[in-house]
Image (cartoon, rainbow, N blue to C red; front, side, top):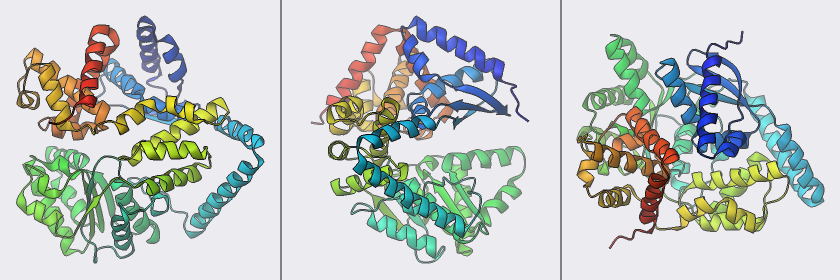
Length: 478
């Protein structure tokens, strides 16, 4: 039965947002992007319908979903909300694709071939198993959708070997590297492969280090530590994302240490991901560093031009879409460091084609992707650069920004740095919390929203933030 316990709150949130956007001269923006139809709710999850995949991606990437959550939390008193978006109008995409096909018979043949290929793969999978997906794994993160190249061949081969023979040669595996290079994709590919090839008969857990901490803390509070330990120390496969989150958390490290030892004795397969080499982590016990690095530590590097072309074509094949060859070349040449940016650019181009019903040309692509391209082709922005430029602009120090000083000036400077880091580096809130003195992700989210809201209501402050961002992008280390 469909529940609508929060519908009245949802309607009030949209009423408030519409008024805010109108008062800031952004009524058109609200009308375009806030197209969500309330369907039902369960506990702290609200289910809504949106017109297309492109619309869903934009709602998330533009931060609208976080605005809605924040207001829901304030109105209801709930600690958190999850919003589940379902696609209701796939026909738009199909009609637009049909128009493009009619313009070019040859493109139609290629597209049909691609769709048949995808269908055959799907049929093979369904013949092999009718298992429901593992609740902690993302189905699309599998070896078939990963594109290996010179930058990640070893990581791909080692991950595949671990998946085929879990708990043996390649164990544990530590995958490290920058944002958007495929660490989580490979880790979950291992999990999906083992889960499917064992027909679900495997004790497998895939969890972020932050969620592991939350679960551990709850077990202490509820006096269920024995149950917690039994759960994790009797696994066949343990996959932990973002172990850099462990820095400075002594009790959590103690628990991970004992879990690691118990699983080693069971020859359980373990895979970890990190955003940097293990020896660069501060506040991590040496005994844990030794264990994390006792197997295979593998660095994922940015893809080569040829690999980027292959990634784009693979993504298009999966989507059953086409874009012009010169646009593919343009994207591959200008986005070099981040696979996630490549995928986002493809979705932007495909989404535009679906909505407008015409192929994207180079000139359209340049306008459509100008923000992504400018960020990707300029000087590499680092957390160090952001902190230095923000500290200099506000006449303070990096130590104050990262420290515990809560004076109004320092707090706002810290919030500015958090906001800009989130915008430029694509760090998650837990990752930012770790960078800013080990702060909780909810504190980081609040800081980000404070600045985002002030930007919307204060034009001079908006100009100030844009000026700092430009200084960061133009900053050159002497």
